[in-house]
Image 1 (cartoon, helix red, strand yellow):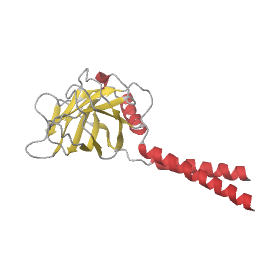
Image 2: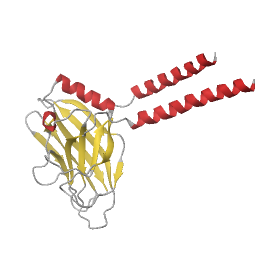
Image 3: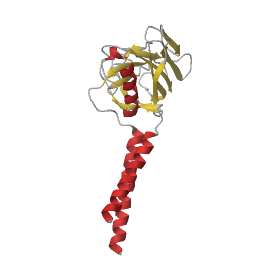
Image 4: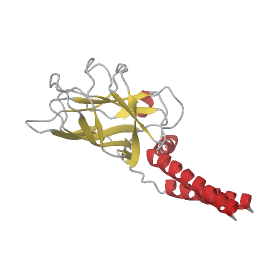
Length: 235
């Protein structure tokens, strides 16, 4: 009877976790991976943002309309705003990384900047959106000194759900182009440079919400089992 009860609790917990995980919003698929100081070679430039005037925020992006790239917002000067063919990145959806180089020219007082939004979009050859995902939540990052402009500072990736959706889109059409849009705050100069790369690992990035649900779910299951056992001992 005890074993049956324990198995029932475990099954219920697993079903609850699976159901909650399955309802995660498609929009929340970009997650922070790690500080990344690799040199940006080859420089698959995707997006450079630079604020104007005395603004402390910058927002812009680049999309594809079927015939050309369309850059918009607070982009920096120069040909740095590009959609990039996924096949040119030389990686898989699971190992795709979005690299960020923070390039604030504010001396030694390098205060953190905040990424309020980051959106990755895949376009087909006609400019139709076939995939889109965004940063799971706003993120504040310290600036890293040294090697500005030549090295990446931070790397972002896709959680397992978003990677699976992008891979499915690529399986249906391998000629997709990736575009980025972002909004950053507490900036004081710039530009902030986004590019694409690939991670060395082969495992999908875990979705933070899923990991929290898994941890709390298993903790709840363990608590229920202990409570049942203690009640049996006291009888």
